[in-house]
Image 1 (spheres, one colour):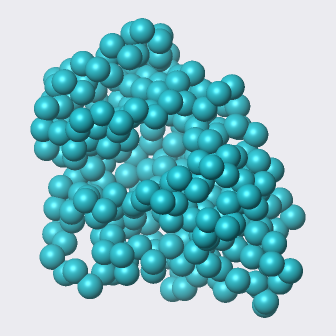
Image 2 (cartoon, one colour):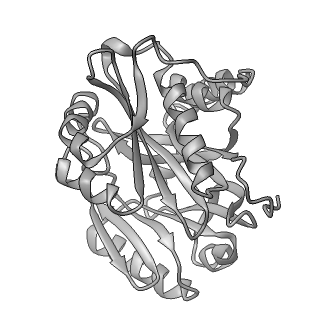
Amino acid sequence: MRPDTLISMPGATLQHGPASDRVYLMKLSSVDATRIIRFMDRLATANGYSKLFAKVPGAAESRFTAKGFRVEARVPAMYGGREDGCFMAKYPDQKRSRIADPQRVRNVLDTALRQEPRPSSPAPPPGWTCRRMAEADVDDMATLYRLVFETYPFPIHDPDYLRSTMRASVRYFGMLDDQGRVVALASAEMDTDGKNAEMTDFATQEDCRGKGLASALLARMERDMAQAGIRTAFTIARAHATGMNVVFSRQGYTFAGTLPNNTQIKGDLESMNVWYKYLDTDDKTQTV
């Protein structure tokens, strides 16, 4: 299945396509939210999508609510340390709004919430290196992503895509073993205007799992983001993936809500949990 399509238009960045069977408003920078909502509705109707999903500042919440959207997760002070981030959805097909196995989602969340935050993340194994990735690494990165994800909502299997996002607002981080092989990856998708970043695209080679590599990568990304002036880190983690939800809970992230049947990963539509954390930056103006 082909990757979803990215649309950049005045005041908004959207993604849509059959892979996740949705329209996703990734960034709203226009005060004319009504125009963007109309465009999303037309796009969904024309393609028969079963979900419209929007990540918007709190100032736009009432505009979306008036047009049938509801808040599924909320991150306080996500934008600029002052304005909430609202993860909102509208369902042309109401069946999609219902989680097929809510108890499984609840069990994973309960396990994650029981974790005690760790004072520090695990250190990489001796001789291993955790570093920011460069354009010279994109072929190795794409190879690992192809091994871990059969399908994914973004074309991270494509070196050209990785290179183009590096040149924009995404920083990738990797774990290299003592032979210099890339064995784990993650990325920080930065919204420099909103001073927030999504911690995402975590992938670990199968024979290297259980070594705390995701936690080590997350800690490294948090330090980098704080130095870049990012105030709020958040993630949208697979609600059935106990390991990743535990990683974020142990790292001091707060649960913000569940997005039903939101994202296609490895061939299935999966519900997702939103977690967030305020980073310790030099800018002390954040208010919560």
